[in-house]
Image (cartoon, one colour):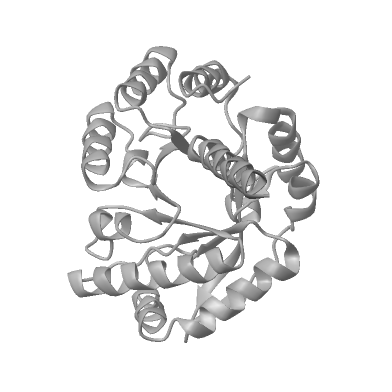
Length: 282
């Protein structure tokens, strides 16, 4: 009996490690839905056709509201087709629209000071609809270092509550406002931190932002955010894509977030190679 218990223990350990390995590398696109005038049906078809290249999808549908409220917006619900195809779903809680509204920092501070109503509502919604977790994208302006401490505390508390219910938490963070402290966020129990400063259109901006992120966030938590167009809203050329993906390989980046669907066809070979480098794509 004791021998069986030992065998079962090691099976559990191996299973746990394999689950961690599967979730540590991958690609997650965002869907902006009506907010980005997306061709939703076409983009869904593309995402579903990419199969093993994509493991998780995030999408607009929720907002942070005043007084720690979770707002459900009247946007197309893509949860069922994504989930029924075996994809993980991490709906985004954003502070759109428009970005940069002065009330957002007020909402964020209300959340920091009284997080439980929001956390309770988000956990309940995830359980109700079968989400695998949440992607938090709160983007205020006018934050302070004190806000960054409070926000990291909120993220840690939210992550802990979701983990108790078998759910995942990811967060989007940048460096253009003191509201975010990548080092503090990296010390929380959040599962992934998606960098937005790496959206930079220029290669130098991308390189600098990536180096800062690597120096601030544990690699196991780091998810590099990339945009599909440059600063002038033009597609990247093959040499530009190759340059960026070579830098990702140099830093052994394991997870990418793509803003936003659809994924340009020119990206597909580079994404396949990215996954191949992680020995995660078959």
